[in-house]
Amino acid sequence: MNMSDASLELSQAIRELAAALPYELAETMALAMLEYDGTEIALNRTRVLSQVSNPNLRARISRMFDLATLQPQMTPVALGLALATAAKSEHAARLAPQLELVWTGPTSRAIPLRRTEQTFLQLIHEASERLLIVSFAVYKIPSIANALATVVAKGVQLTLCLESANVSEGKIAYDTLKAFNPQVAQRATLLFWPLEKRDKNDDGKFGSLHAKVAIADGKTMFLSSANLTDYAMNLNMELGVVIRGSALPALVEKHFQELKGQGTLVPMKDVLG
Image (cartoon, rainbow, N blue to C red; front, side, top):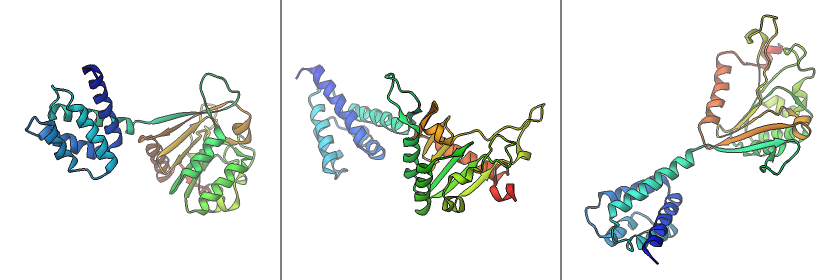
């Protein structure tokens, strides 16, 4: 193995170790190497391995040190800096949002896309504590209605924020709640946007509750053009995105919580009487 190959292999081993280690442990290990006042890689290896009991991680750490000893210029401090840099990069990548496109409609070969209904059902079943769903139209969604009934029965706190035929001035001609199983409508927190809380234009026309979003446990968010309707799930062209691994789902969930707290969104019984 020439010097260039050895350097590349060491670099790969450091990246793989940073990916395998919990961030806090990687930081602790890097700090131990940075604080070591000697120049012997072998002695530093013993010091670092004494902090790790997992056999798989010990093997990865030993491999990194084995490759480091092949680099005459490598010191414990330089190795510690390389591990610290790799660990911080890996940590930042873990915190970065993960995006996935979702589509209903004609397909192409450009990019692979998941179906809207499939994605919605997965998000519903992912929820273990809370589930927020916001939609303008809700109509003929038996698979989603059944999935909601299942998670509600398990104790998931469901909040439905919907447009209402009673307050939409004809934009919705049917009762959105009829699309859900009775136990869902009974157990869920049902929120509406009353007319007196809506802005209107010069012609006196009111805005609509037109957002479409679902959020599971403040961790996963599905933003979509699709309403909760059979047309949107199977016939229309609809495009959306699933967002994981960032603060955005929790922030949007908090936004709707604060809209409720300030009285912009109100429980159904307060709207319908």
